[in-house]
Amino acid sequence: DAGVIQSPRHEVTEMGQEVTLRCKPISGHNSLFWYRQTMMRGLELLIYFNNNVPIDDSGMPEDRFSAKMPNASFSTLKIQPSEPRDSAVYFCASKIRQGGAYEQYFGPGTRLTVT
Amino acid sequence: DQQVKQNSPSLSVQEGRISILNCDYTNSMFDYFLWYKKYPAEGPTFLISISSIKDKNEDGRFTVFLNKSAKHLSLHIVPSQPGDSAVYFCAAVIQGAQKLVFGQGTRLTINP
Image (cartoon, rainbow over all chains, first blue to last red; front, side, top):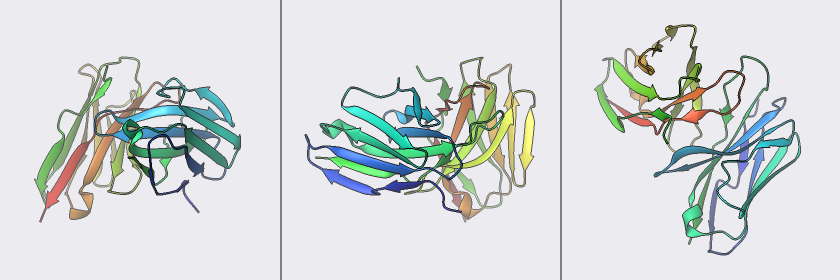
């Protein structure tokens, strides 16, 4: 069974460019999470969705960041315009939304470098 | 405000010995805790969890202990193996909620 799939695995872009990160959650999972990992701040939650609906985007750093989940099998995280401080590893995770199930399953991450 | 803290950035243990990784939390509302393991260039993978109604949970070589009064949990790995070398994250959640709050991680190195 395939795990969470993220693309691209690596992205190098210039400041000011638009960046789109993609995620395919595990089939049957109905909650999806976007995280960012940096040395300074560790692993921080940006936004999460339940049944394709954004529930909490309080972790999104600023308006340059946006996330969508058009259907149960696909989500995007977009940064426009990108800045060097956005350089980080971005993880997508999914889980089944049911009582007592707290384990999230992570994708391999996208390493973003903004020059 | 760091609600979940792993105060040791790194730990080195000899193969075959016990590894003990520690985690402290400040939010008394947290009542479910998880440990994740992360290898380089991979995402974190779930390892073991514990509910606040327990003080110990064991799964093979891995045991998690929870001390609610001290707001402290620890992960014991015994015996430690070279494949255990990774970064370990603890995470906490309020049951019924969805958001995991992660610690900064501890890099464990198992020496042969």
